[in-house]
Amino acid sequence: MTKVPIILIGGVPGVGKTSISGYIAREMRINLVFSGDYIRESLRSVVEPGNILNTSVYDSWKFFGDNTESNVIKGFISQGEIVNRATNKIVKRAILNGEPMIIETLYFIPEQLNEILSEITPIYIYIDDEDLHVNRLNEREKYTHFGSPGIRLSSNIKNYRIIMRKSLEEATKFGINTFDNRMYEETRDKILRLCIDS
Image (cartoon, rainbow, N blue to C red):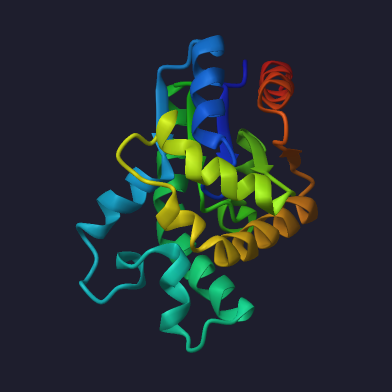
């Protein structure tokens, strides 16, 4: 039986996961592309008002105390536990139906997705250079997020970079391919080749 192409592309805002997901979808003729942001937003409609999911990920540390690296990670992991339960269900349904799919998500926590990892192509995108990352965040509304000014996100770059490092650590632990997206076209072509060959 041929493996259905189901691709999970992780990364914090500004690293290029939305652009690359769209490119891969077009090149591989994949019609279903899901955003973790929209999965999270739909879940917010069914959780209690005080639930941790109802805050931005960069502010979720507030549920655990001070703005420390440890608490930023705790907030990220806690939100991920909710979002990734839904992601697991979506992927399992796609596998059952034989539907190719791409999911691009901030909540790249392989441990929470362990039951589906062997069935999909997981990829993590990051930008090692912090200044370049900030510039990409500030410019993203020109290309993909037309109503979402990047300045709000770049002002929280410290917490996003903590999340990025945690996801990179997890990706390494699980042997998942990671890509430093310094050069967009080069990165997208490498990722496309990986997806085609998987």
